Image 1 (tube, rainbow, N blue to C red):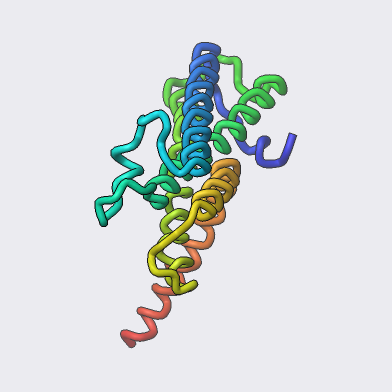
Image 2: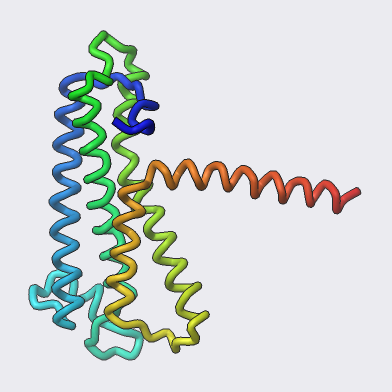
Length: 196
């Protein structure tokens, strides 16, 4: 078991573990469904199932071509769900097999906190993947001097990166916290020095 798995010493009841497995199974199925949907639409160039046609088809100009931004948005969410589900299902079953969950009667707050740890990780993964999506949309495309026209490969790039963001959401959260603290400290020290 990796060192990161050793840090979590939570307490989850047997019913809570079953609930988490059901939760992650639902997220995995939803992620797979959306992933395949985006992949099919991205490769065919239209929505053969007419599931999200109102969301992905109309462009600003009013024609019925695929809006790749919207498709990349859905694809980023689905990929991060898949990555996060893979990571945290693996973590839960490894911790269950290794008896890292306390079997004693833990307090309600400890049990609740342990459950929230696992419930919110996919949500963090989605947030991080949407930030990456926005970075690609507003950062890379204008730098490359593209006239706001993106191709289907942008959808693939967003989905690929978002999977790994979801897979490593916990590590990314730690990196952002440490980097954010340094950034705030630097800004604070510059503001203090500037006001003197």
